[in-house]
Amino acid sequence: MPGPRKLDPSASPRALLGAELRHRREAAGLSQTDLGAPLFLSGSFIGQLESGVRRMQMDQAEKFDEMLGADGFFVRNCEALKKSKYPEHFAEAAEAEARAETIREYAPQLIPGLLQTEGYARAVFRAYQPTAEESVIDELVATRLERAQILADPTAPLLWVALDEAVLRRRVGGPEVMAESLCHIAGLARRHRIILQVLPFSAGAHAALNGALKMMSFCDAPPLAYLEVLGVGRLEDDPAAVARYDLSYDLVAASSLSPDESLALIETVAEEFTHEAQEL
Image (tube, one colour):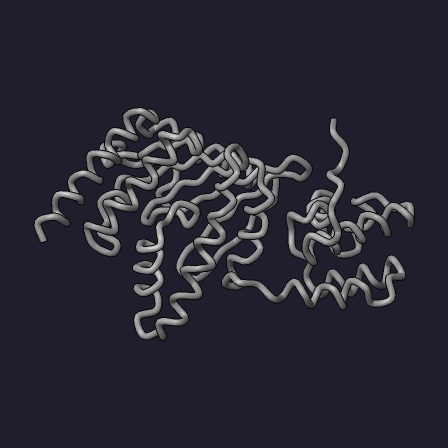
């Protein structure tokens, strides 16, 4: 089994905290389980903190300073983690996503953020905030596009997306935006950068009817599941719950069209939107 990943403390505040937590815990002769017990945290959660997958909370930082004699180090540096470009309910999930080795996502309504074009993202954020100033929307769009840069690496993370057919049919931003967006996704699939499936309407009831689902796995930490509804998100690390959501994703994939059939459907719908845009 490979050892824990060597973190670069200069990479981010989270990496700094993780590296220091691991160093001080080992110097104190404590296991991850020993350190987590007084805070009612599992050993695997401590491992996720040390590997930079999970975000340290202020109450945890205070306890770590006390237990490890860190003289306020964790509290001082934990402040930096509060400064995130993402909404509070999504910040931790976005940071975990950037460290994931594999991401599997089921999208029931919208193209996932990692696959959105500028036009699509702008239409989504304008729908969310119809009275916001244009500068606010610009910043949100820029942050979303920056997040998608993790796909610039030709091989990692492995991204496997299952799109509900409703995602293809919902006219976000109009026919021109939809045509561009679907062609973008199809292009990623044709370049073998993503694994792509479509869950057709004909599949009927399925295992993820309740909403969106994102599964993330890591080379040096236990897997996580992220679930989100309107303005609320939850990162789940309980092994039993993660296993249940993992099965749900597998069942969705099993009910979906094959990658080749999915690509053909997406390109057909994109062509329909292109013709509609040309007629306007």
